[in-house]
Length: 404
Image (tube, rainbow, N blue to C red; front, side):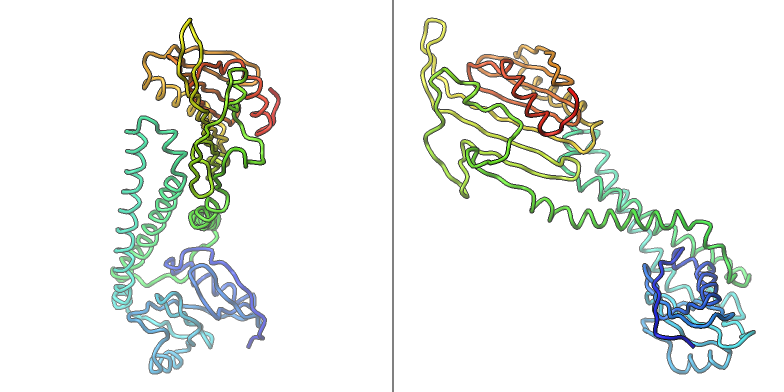
């Protein structure tokens, strides 16, 4: 009837939309494609001559992988041949002669055959929907209760993707249950099953939901490997790429500066002077740079002051530019709140969209954003960060070039 040439197709509807699936398989037979294997995501067809072949989906009532021989013999006498099994939920039958008798003449008995699948779908719909609601509630409550919701959102990129994935999965599980529930209720009321339904009507929506689910699943699986592959931590002198920061020795120049001499190496990295890079889906570039100088005595205000200059720089380059300004403001509020005695000054520089400093005794914080970039510098020392804004602006321009 057909040759060995095979064709693979995605179903245009859910497998529990029985009338639409039967119509789709019958229409493909009319174009010369006959189902050989059936999966929830992919069907395999063999090419042959076009024919007026009808297909029926019969609910599987046990764990059988194919119908027993006596069932196949009885159905063959009625004009039907076993074609494939669909996810251990349905046996797919095709007519072998015109005007083959219907597999079920009593709709009520036909309805009872769906009981096993119906019970499984109901449990799956309830559990998936509950999980989606729990994750959504956790995410929303965390965002509402956190003092730093933007940072929380960016620091946990898997969480919003997981919430979206489970929400879509929950909606699809409920839709599958309701689809079968309507069919079962119709049969239980004595109305014979329909065997044709427009499977093209919601094709775009079905394919879009399937594509989004698959894409989200891919990101959730691939993201940990990407993070592991891209992240690194090195001593600052060993970093060979340019980084968006102000070197501590530049800030302290002319003040007899020297780097911290006590070497404390952990996993080959200097604990006092190191840079760490991390990648996530929402933050493609995140740097944390720690720098520390040697303790020394400095003459200031007619007295000797002991100082140990150090700086901690945290830099974000975001995938969503709309979050840059909220992150900048959130960091500014959070850190200034923790140092209420700081003198806050809003500055102006052509290389930045917004820039602010917060100063207290021997401690300066600088907050700046430009486009999709945000930086926060904490500096302990007697130098002035404002003198090196041009250096920082040039580093921003190199990380994400655009007109200033």
